[in-house]
Structure formats: structure tokens, C-alpha cells
Length: 256
Ligand SMILES: NC(=O)c1ccc[n+]([C@@H]2O[C@H](COP(=O)([O-])OP(=O)(O)OC[C@H]3O[C@@H](n4cnc5c(N)ncnc54)[C@H](OP(=O)(O)O)[C@@H]3O)[C@@H](O)[C@H]2O)c1
Image 1 (cartoon, rainbow, N blue to C red):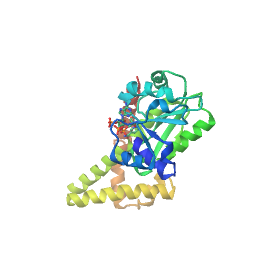
Image 2 (cartoon, rainbow, N blue to C red):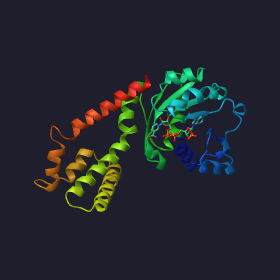
Image 3 (spheres, rainbow, N blue to C red):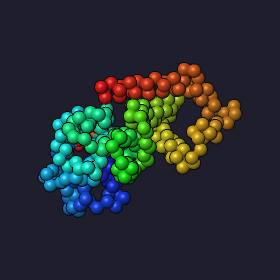
Image 4 (cartoon, rainbow, N blue to C red):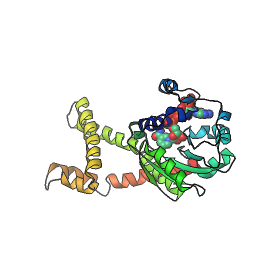
């Protein structure tokens, strides 16, 4: 996820010389950027009062990694964490010094610049710092801001895990097509292109999903027969209600 962000910043024209990456085992793409001036694992003491720090380590690594960052933080620095399940308070405690903190939850389409991040800013974050965090996160797609940090839990459940639900939808549609007689590879191809194409159509048209659904549902037609089952009282909505509630609960548990 950190690599995806870096790629996005470079795409937007950020000079690699202005970026330092701390990463025990840099991927070859990162090492290659060293040739363009990217600072890879520089001496941390050589960096003070940096403009922004983006924390993209695994949450379980936070306790070990965060205290090392403290010396880079100055009065102007904004720290943006994308770690799942780590609250602003726990990050502040681990950093061991007061600073301006933004917590964000991106999702994996970030890798192709088509993710969405939801961010929350702690009180000391200034307008300029929030704008900088917004710019950094928008390199990977859209950004939405919320005021209540607890909302990051349902956000994690909906957009954080969302790509997995969509991939599952592809699998389920393909499997149902196979059971209806289609060759497995054709069924998977149909499901994959249909789900991604419908997603793109929804994005570009801007019409509400319900309207787009109605547009492809002719009265007394075949789609309607399927929708009667999917939209029944025991259809897809109660399943999603339970799934999102379970993931939201788990997100709160992980945050402690
Ligand atoms: N993937 C998602 O869908 C998603 C969505 C939202 C938020 N997030 C959050 O984004 C963060 C990164 O997730 P990811 O899926 O990209 O995981 P990841 O690929 O494992 O990224 C974590 C990176 O941090 C590096 N690292 C480990 N210890 C470090 C240290 N002490 N100092 C500096 N770097 C260190 C890891 O290096 P090694 O490989 O050498 O360990 C690894 O490259 C996580 O906190 C996750 O909760 C992920």
C-alpha cells in the first residue's frame, strides 16, 4: 500500500529526491528509484522537521517502527497513518510526542490509482496539513473526510474489505453460470468483465445504482426473475447487513 502511494506521488510529478522511504527489504521498483534520487533507508537523524510522514507498516509493527520516527517530527509535520485498527490515540502514544495526526483507511484499488481513502484529522491538524494529507492520499484515488474517528470502523468494513466482496461476487456469479451449463472459463470471463464493466459504467454515468439497475431490468424479463430472488427478504441485503456489521465489530475489536 505504501508502494502504491509512492507510485501515485511520482505519477503526479513529486520529485523523488524529496522522499525518503524506510523499508527493511525494499522491492526492486523502490531500489530502482534510488537512481532518481529517492532516499532509501537514509540515516534517520539526517531528517528533521519533515513536511509529512506516511506510516504504512503493518499494524503489528507499529510499536517497533513508530518511536524511530519521533526525531523527524517538527511543529509543521503531519503524520498520516494508513494502518488498519490503530487509533489516533494509540499512534500518538507510540510516537511518544505530540504531533498533528491524520488516520486514513485506503483500499487496494489504490494500486491502480482507483482506490478511495477515508480520513479523519486529529484536533491539532491545521488546514494546510489537512490539505497536504488530502493531496498525498488523492494520489491513489478519491478521498473522503469524516469527523468521527469511530466511523473508520464501518469504513474499514465497507470500502477497506469491499474489493474482496466484489471478487467474491465474481466467483459466485461464475460458479452459478457454470452450474447453469457454461464452461467454467467462459463463466469466469463473463463474470469478471461484467462486474468490472458495470462498475466502470456506474462510475462514469453518475446515475444512482438503483436507477442503473432499473435500466437493465425489463418488465417480465429475465433479469427481473433473478432480482426477485436477490432482493427477497432473505436475499442479498440481509447478508450484507450481517457481513458489514461483523467486519465493523471486528475492526472495533482490533482497535481495542
Ligand atoms: N492491503 C489493504 O487492503 C489495506 C487497506 C487499508 C489499510 N491497509 C493498511 O496498510 C498498511 C500496509 O498494508 P499492506 O497490505 O501494504 O502490507 P505490507 O505489504 O506488508 O506493507 C507493510 C510494509 O512495511 C514494511 N515494514 C515492516 N517493518 C518495518 C519497519 N520497522 N520500518 C519500516 N517499514 C517496515 C514491510 O516490510 P517487510 O515486507 O520487509 O515486512 C512492508 O513493506 C497496513 O497497516 C494495513 O493495515 C491495508
